[in-house]
Length: 119
Length: 206
Image 1 (cartoon, rainbow over the protein chains, first blue to last red):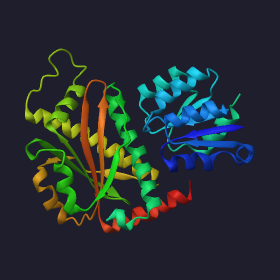
Image 2 (cartoon, each protein chain N blue to C red):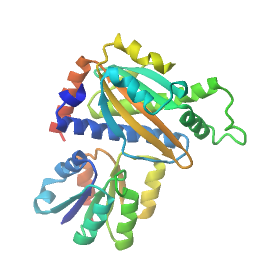
Image 3 (tube, rainbow over the protein chains, first blue to last red):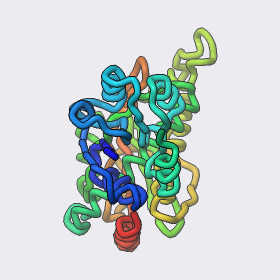
Image 4 (cartoon, one colour):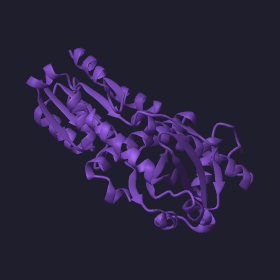
């Protein structure tokens, strides 16, 4: 399985990384990016099975990156992990095709549910 | 001061937790007024009490700045100060009264403006500090906020032994207008020691 984690905060990437179920982490290829531009480039290069994407980032934000990823691949599986928990932000990204919006910091149990629900 | 006394990795943890807490606070305000704010990564600085004036007045004129203060109590305690200029305060008031019909956005008087500022700073400060405390495994209670003159702020805080100040500089970027402000979180040496331990615990238990 290929996993892409994109967040400008190293701590937030580490939080997701450490909380991915061990059984999945053992056999997964994990890629990390620090902004929306890197998210799009890494997605196109590796075609990950699942993406964890922050919204508030420098260079290119997660809204734009999500749009570009969805334009590139309508079957992309993107979960938003963000501090921006505004109702309108959630509506917007879900309307753009994100699978879910998760408030930071994401819980280990929730991550297990997300992986269990992967198609 | 935090910058010298807190290890870099814990400064990063603190920065990210503040980012999460401030995002939560902004969302509370935006949702409350059925608006949408584009969130920007807040700039976080650590300053000493002697530098507080410089930080407030480098962006605001003395005649134009409104500062509100609110004390918080608990395992983590101190004071949160919010500063914004008149232009941003008026923008904030327009957002608050946007749904109340034609003419409601007219500014009536300075007292009404101050009430709006108090309301917003109360929500912003308590949501932000409340969320930060929650992330650090504790909770806090809040005293009612009050408006103070910016030029006496530093002087009066000396008596309270606040030696550590975290400054969050941000823009609440609403659809048609911006509200620029600075949030100052002030606390004592004793609270700095508590914060140091709490950040270590957070990092160890990710």
